[in-house]
Amino acid sequence: MPVLSVIVPFHNVGKYLGPCLDSLAAQRFRDFEVICVDDGSRDDGAAVVAARAAADGRIRLIQQANLGVGRARNAGVREASGRYLAFVDGDDMVPRAAFQRLVTSLESTGSDLACGNVMRLHRNLLVPSWAHREAFAEPAARTHITRHRLLIRDRMLWNKVYRRSFWDALGLSFPDRMYEDQPVAIAAHVGAGAVDVLHKVVYHWRQRDEPGASITQRRLEPDNLRDRLLSVLETAALLDARARRLRPEFDRDTLEIDMAVAVEAIAGLGADADDALVDLVVRYLDSVRPDVLPRVPYALRLLVHLLHQRRLDEVAHVFAQARDGLLHPPVGSAGLLRKRWYGRHPALPGHLSEVSEELSPTARLVELEWRGGVLRGAGRVGVGRFDVSELDRVRVSVWLEERRTGDRMPLSVESASPTWENVELPDGGCVPEHAFPFRFAFDPAALTPERIARLGHWDLRVGLKGPGLRLEGKVRGDRRLPPAAPPPRRRAGVWLVPALAFRGAWGLRLRRAGALVRHCEVDGGDLVFSGELADPGDGEPVVRLVRRSDGEEMYFPATLAGREFHARVPLAGIDESVGEESWWEVVVDQGRAIRTLVRTQERQPVRVEGRSFLVDRSDDGCLLLLER
Image 1 (cartoon, rainbow, N blue to C red):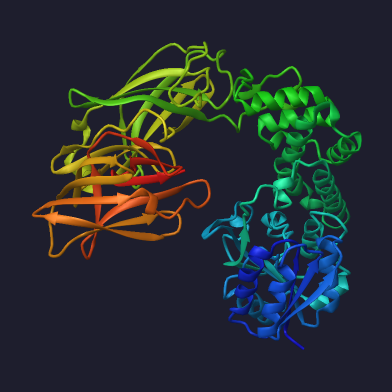
Image 2 (cartoon, rainbow, N blue to C red):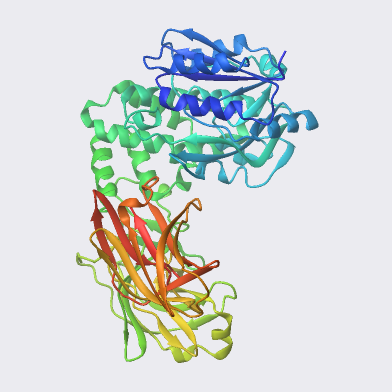
């Protein structure tokens, strides 16, 4: 008998099944069986399994008609003979040490199940799974979902190993529908005597490219939504019966995830929405505690309230407004000693209108340039997507704040009365229409020798201050649209680099330059740039492109004449974008990495063989290439 039984249901995922089984065969933990259940596939998936089974006696194949993944998993469990159970979807992959870590943990602690962290897999790129990041931030042995409540988000089946005796004693089995794993995963968490939480990644959850290929991609289809809602109702009933204290956490996540999908689907269906679907939504919302919905973001709260009341025409109208950035509820306050803030909408009752915890400044730059040796900028700051036209005596302040030390340099600010007309902005309307315009100026003379010596990174921040109102945040922007970052300026041997950071915040970086790029352009589909090395070494340099998301590297030749270097990078030869976008940092390598400093102000969007690139600067002035 093997120690571990791994059940792999599959249906029409032949192109991914081979890599999945290869990742299982490569596990450091060796004492397991793999039971592959063909759920009526019409592709070559069964042949892929048969070929692997011929080479590895631990793998075997069973087949059934297309009865659904729930029945396929149940069939695999019936065939399993191991002391432990694990589940893997046929299009996903498992890191080499995963089962070793999970089984070893259970053997050590005696817990009923062990679960671990997850990464999303898109082609060859891995990124953290948002659903698991917080719950698995810290390891914990012999804990429980009632003590580690973030595990309410751990509703997937496959990042776990279960003790088989525990599984059977709890009588766990999968319902005959989609989203069958949520009620089973939560039932296991609630029913366990103890659970091990591993911070290490134990599962790679694939994001597939083909439109409509996965259950998640078909989430707006009525049958898909019906099964999602049935799983939500089943899980809610389980928690009511066995862990009532977890309902608020479950409902908060369900409102923001599942109900958001329900709103989108039913808004799209409009008058054609099935009454039975709406009945399922209402049935769930009837069971949600009154104090939970006000904790949901305002726009979604409004839409869920309308859906709960079956006001479907209004759901469709408000959803379209929110989607198009046209939902701007006016904000007002109440109270004297402790002001509370409310977003007013005729459809939302007062007890659901408070937005005090949601208010934050939304600031965007529309101008930034050096004039007379001073960095001058202009922007607009509002309060999220709320209409703040009723606010009075509000003052705008702008400052630079050093990330490491918190040191602040206040900037001179000119602010004007708020404007409420529709204004066409360079960033495509990301700034609220109802916003306070401001202008500021930064004089490099404010940089003392101590500040210059720290070579710090300073964020541009903005504050709004008025009666009962104290808000502050970063000034952000969209790096694909104007304004372009001004060129670096030199002061006391250090470069001052105004730039938009990788995650969209404007700031000022103080740094030295090992390689200065003086000329950069796209010529005939090639990125051509040249400049000067501060300290040229021996031998020819190369250009190294480093992808920020995963560290992938590509190399291209360069030439050196004295201090001057020249490089040409064919854009068509760069690895294709993984996911929505890929960021490549350009480094000159001469046996050591020499990070560039780009003086050119141009931001060049180009298309090469159907691919879209943007040549830009990073937040510290390094040459950056974005494919989107």
